[in-house]
Amino acid sequence: MTEAYDALRARLGRSAELYGARGASPTVNAMLADPLGAPTLAIAITDRIDAAARVAPVDVHALLVESARLFDLEAPSDDLGPAMADAMLARASDWEARLALAVELLGDAARELDDALSAIPVEERPALRDATNSLLTAFATNVYPTMEEAHGRTCKSLLSIDRPALLRAAGWAAIVARPDFWMPLRDEARRRAAGSTARLDGVEGKLIEVRDTPLGPVVIGGFAKNRYARPLALAVDFGGDDVWSAAATSAEPEHPVCVVVDLFGNDLYEPAAEVEVGRPAQGGACLGIAILCDQFGDDRYRGGRLAQGAAAGGVGVLVDLQGKDEYQGDAYVQGAACFGVGLLVEVAGDDSFDAALYAQGMAGPIAIGMCVDVAGKDLRRATGRYPSSYGTAGEFMAMSQGCAIGMRTLAEGKVHVAGGFGILVDGGGDDRSTVGEFGYGIGYYLGTGIVRDRGGDDVVEASRYGIATGAHQAVGLVLDDDGDDRYVNRHVASIAGNWDHMVSILVDARGDDVYEAGGISLGSSTITSFAALIDGAGKDRYDAGGSDLALGACGHADDVRNGTRSVALFMDLAGKDEYAQVNAAPPPAEGFTALRKRTDTHEGKSAESGIGLFVDQVATKRR
Image (spheres, rainbow, N blue to C red):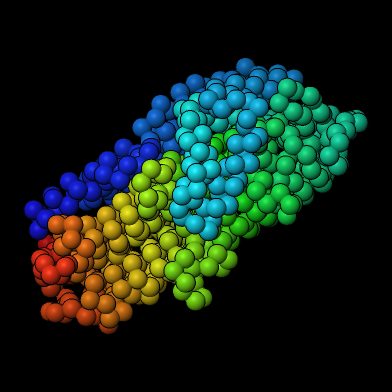
């Protein structure tokens, strides 16, 4: 088995080279080359993400540094980190100095952004924005959009963006988005509000101050309900149940930098109008930098596409610190990005997340998408609008919840771009996740999808290619630290089962868990792939759905064609377990270990196509 594993990892480690993808991350290459080391890498990555989300204020700088690290890019310097930011604030403690500092930092962000986009002439950026929207629309219904020459040209333009400069631009803007930048001014804001007559077209309600800048208006809102319905460079609102339009909370070439800080109130964030369905919103950016921070309140986020911490060719960030919040969106939402970085950080509250496609920690080509929920009993749903690409009645595409997907074609001479890192981190709470096809820790075409759940009794219901799976030279990982969890996916390629040059691993460390699976599942790999299901402790139940490709069984006729063997592991390391609907000989049992080999035939040639290990270990008491 060691020989088969070593041969497999050597083949997988050459995936980017063999399949001609642009922009493949060294990190995904490392995971493909060392599948058993992938969980350790993913734990380190998600530990850093979780730590950045738990500090006050949320360390957006650290999340940007992590985004650079994942692609081995030059990271934003410590000059943009919390220590230097604290020093800046200490030197600019009064109202005038603090506003002047904010304008200066936004100017720094704009200059870095212009450097990042320097390969794209300024006058051509609106047209590239429109072409990018067209590309994303095509990608929503066809995973091969670059078969069209126009979309291939758009990808090439987006690949020209200087990503380190883009991250630096976001780092400057993130300092202004910290609540502690503005909270010390609250008493002064109340005093100034009493006599203010400030007004601005497109903004209704009580304003404290309005300033014109080269980037657009800077607006300081008061303590009552306001409505913001126009593009803004900076908006800070001190209170009231406000209404924010898409234009006021997003960035595009015409208004490339936007920072919004809402400190108090139960706010409503509106989507773009139906005629502007491709326009970003709520910390959404296309060829720009948009950061939205909402400190307190039970808020409602209503988005269309490219919203709620999402970006295309830019950086979009949404940080919500407290409250019982509702997120609704269509596609490319809730921590999603293509050719950029999209971050959604939810710190506290029992929240609901509802989307249709490309959401909740989703990364497209050379992108980072993070959805981080630190605490709370949450509901996540990503399904229901885009019909199954396989024509399965009643099923829908999702590509969500820790999902990363590249753009590939089945033709030579077209543009192929590697996927990025789609990461979902849940810090605890009894959560329920429902996701359509391709969801919950899945990778596709040199993408890496990661789900890390730190605790809680969770339920996950998925469809085809769901729960630590994927296809075509990629990595899908689910890491659950604790809790009595239930994983349900009766479809093919499910729950640590995969297809075609994949690494898929589910590790559940503790808890009395239930696994309800279908074909190619529960530690089963096919076509030059590796899969593992490892359950550390607890009284567990495994239902294989009658599949003969489960519980360490692996292999496919195409392995014979490729001259490879797939490798799989199923390991239950402790606890009294139950097995149902098993199609394996000999059948699994407590304290049982078996080496499972499979032979297949391709064009008259028969050979071993897979080798797997089944282990059910009975824990021994310590002396």
